[in-house]
Amino acid sequence: MINIGPYQLDGQAVLAPMAGITDQPFRQVCHRMGAAMVTAEMSTSKADLRQTSKSLLRLADAADSEPRVIQIVGTDPAEMAIAARYHVDAGAQIVDINMGCPAKKVCKKLAGSALMKNPSLVADILKQVVDSVDVPVTLKIRTGWDLENRNAVQIARMAEDIGIQSLAVHGRSRACRFNGLAEYDTIAEVVAAVNIPVFANGDIDSGQNAQKVLNHTAASGVMVGRAAQGRPWIFAEINQYLNPLPKNAQKTSTNRPGCFTAWQKGLIIEHLELIHDYYARFETQNLLHRVAKRSTINKDQAIDLAVKISRKHVCWYFNQMVQCASNLMKEHTSDFSVATSSCLVAENQAIKTIEIAKKQFNTLLVAKDQLQFLKQFFSETNLKGDIAA
Image (cartoon, rainbow, N blue to C red; front, side, top):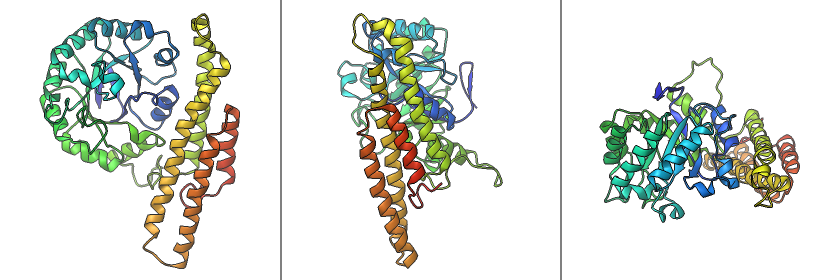
């Protein structure tokens, strides 16, 4: 078991915080699918931005699974400490510090992974945040600033000495962004250098891959980011690979990773409903009375926000369907039997059907129309092999 302060995680796979992605509905779905811990999108430490709609959406939510983890980003130690207290007062149970984001708009302010270039500032930020709150503080970093300056081990040791209670290490430098393959040697060095839990992050997209990374690094767990987009059940797949169920036990995930079954279609519908409900509820309960004097935001716009966010997540699901059908086509390409030829035709038609549905979904302007469209698509469309119920 992995312990972070008083919290004991019930698995080894956790969800990475991702800006614009890991909102409350997505975190809820990933937790249901087996993510042992989920972290909210990074929130700025700037006090003058706390009342914006984006910042308010990133506060701890009572519906979140415990421990409720909020990630903060910034460069000023005092501001970061104040932000940590603010989020703890709002319900955060763990504060995570972002020193792993490679985005230009973050790094140009010398925040995120840019901080790794200045270890003394890192130490000051960590100390002030740890001293400011009575909840566990965790840290997400990269291997270093660039390939020639991998200082993750130095930062990790310093973080442990200051009181950081767990680390997540992405296996790329800031300069690499998300290009190339992640390397795990540096993560292994970090694990060997500290006595706190370390999560390996980067290119973990299957249970088999997760096991290889754990074997290579001896990390406590893995952190999954982009691979969970449109595929939140990856956590169930990883959990079942790392801890196989008895042969007669019922599995939660699909036998063929990426393929869709009836319960997965139901999960997608549920995710869509969660998005609609959350953003409408949030607008009604939290935004109107706070920003009415300085904003034209209204309930209709909140629904519109839900529609836009739904498009992103549902299109990721559509992409997974296409990928599955494509994988099946590759498997059948070398077989020239009549039955296989029929399968290839069906799989090619499935891809075309999904792509058309994806375009149609993106034209819908009302939440209820999105829901009705998706329900009808799943109930009436028979896509052979890849999403058969």
